[in-house]
Structure formats: C-alpha cells, structure tokens
Length: 399
Image (tube, rainbow, N blue to C red):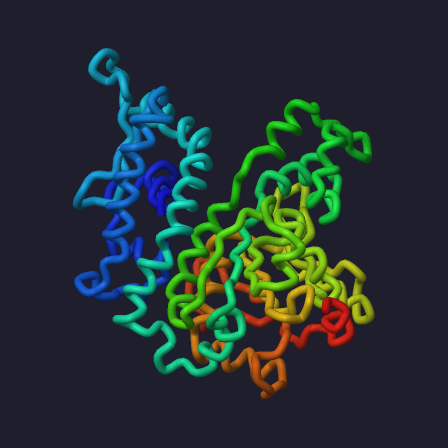
C-alpha cells in the first residue's frame, strides 16, 4: 500500500487517491466494491499512518523530508522538516521528495511489507467472511485450492530486484547454488566480455533488499484467496528462502530466474524463458521448445512496436512433490495485474483448462504465456500465446 500510494503521488502526480482505488489495485477487491461493509483499506491506512509517525519520530528522525498520510485522503503528503526555517519553491521541494523516495522507499517499503505480512491475514480473513471472492467460480476455486491448502502454509517469495540489476549490468549469470551460499559475492566487480563493475558499487547493489513494485503490488490479491481456504501466507524475500521450504511448502515464486533464482530448478519443466535486451533494457519471452519449428531463440514479443505486455504463469510440483509451486513473472506491472485477474476470472481459467486438455483433479501442471494488449486491463482481451501441459518427464524429475 505504501509503495502504491507513493508511486501515484511522486511518479504520476496524483493529488487524490480514493479508498476503492486502493482496494482494487492493492487488495484485489472489485472495482466498485462496497467500502461501507469492507474496511480493509481503512484498517491498513490507520496502521500505516501510525507506523509512519513512529518511523519519522525515531529511526527516520534525521530525514529531511517527512511523509504523512492525512485522514480523509489516501494521497501521502511530503513535508520539509525544516519548512519553518527555510523556504523552498514547490518545484525544488518535489525534486527533493522524489530523491528521498528513491533513497528511502525500499527501506520503508519493506517495513510496510513486514507490517503487511503480519496483518494481511487478519484483515483479509475478516473481509472474506463477508464476501467470498470465489463465489460462482468453480474453475477458479479448483485452481487456487491447489496452491492454498488448508493446514499447509503457502510461501510467497518476493523477487530480489538487486541481484537482477547486478546481472543486467555485468552480463554475468548467478546460479541458485551461488545465490544460496552467497559465493557469488566473492566475484563482485568481475564480469565476462570485458565488462567491469567497481566492486564497491557492485556490493552496494547486490546487498540492497529490494523487490519490484509490480510483484509487491500483486501480493495484495493473494490475501483474500488464501483466507478463503483458511491458509496461512508466509511472506519471504528471495534471499531468505531455503531449499527445505521449497521441498515441504506450497509456494508462489514472484519474478523470473534473474530476479528470483529459486525459479531455476523448475525451468526444465517449462519452455518459456525471459531474455534480457540490453538495447531496450527490458525482458522479452522466448519459447525454447519452438526450436524444431523455427529459430532456436525465436522471440515471441512483437518487435514492431513492443507495446504489448507479456505474463508467464506456470504451476508445478515443489521439489519433493508434496506441494505445488506457482510461478508468476511479467514484463511490467500492468501485464502482471492482468495475469492476476486472469487467474480469478471463471471464463479464462475454464478456457485454460480446456486448452491444456485435461480434466483430472487437482488442477494439472501447466505453463501459459499471456500476451496483454497495450492499454488493456481486462483478462478477456489477453491471448494465450503458449498454453500446454508441463513436461511430464521434467516434472517427475523435480520430485
């Protein structure tokens, strides 16, 4: 919630943010849900307001810019702490606030995430009692029941944006084994192909604990679904995750292999990979299993305008075969948001099951790559570019 409202003000210039907007984008409510009977946003706003006051009075006492969340409007206000002593123009002040946001947002954001991890279960359980998010959606309920199982925890593993940036700058891949035991830290500053990154700078990058806004925002949709099945969600940063958890728990892995190395063990079971384009500084999907038909690295993204978004969704067994893992990655926040709506839309999930060609229960293992048209936010507009069962041999190997 903190990341969303700060982005709306500092990056988009919003002066008003309404309760329904936050409920829809952050907590996965319907666009026009009844705020009189669902107070989730107000509860979280009250807790966030208190946490902000506490932060700026203690740990953030030295911050030159103070962030406040006024009552009656969810658009945060940024104030110069020394405003009574020093007058600055609105333009200069906003630049200062933006610089502060870039520096402090992730620190505050992760504090807010920690708050959300401990409170989202209570808040969403209360709202779920009033409105079942899966009412009248048997296919959607069947899909999510494979991820959220009563009595078994589900880990939501946020991506490590810092390790992704490090690999983009150096062109050097970090394998899961190196990421897990931190051995990649010994090679900071060295990169192949003549690329160099100052060791101090490299260290400053990889040691930051940052997650992409798109994946943090998507997390809000999972709370009501988990509450529906009486499932506990454990929010984990990728750097803190473990093989033991991935063997025993259900999990939702946010991000792709570069930003979330825990995706690596599952890539053998699916054909779609994300490739980094240094020219555009963005990622595009490639179907590596299409090699027999066309070029071995045939890009699926339209190169003509590059405006369409893409999202990859895959469901696979965990490393021991005792639970399920959901992989979610996308080219951006809009595509990821539509992918989330796709998985809550009865027609879309029913069509997905039909395309997979399987009727067994529980929901079969699969991968689907969605093309999201530019400026579209409706799951009915997406195209399933790739839709197939996960490779049976590879899935068996994961167990």
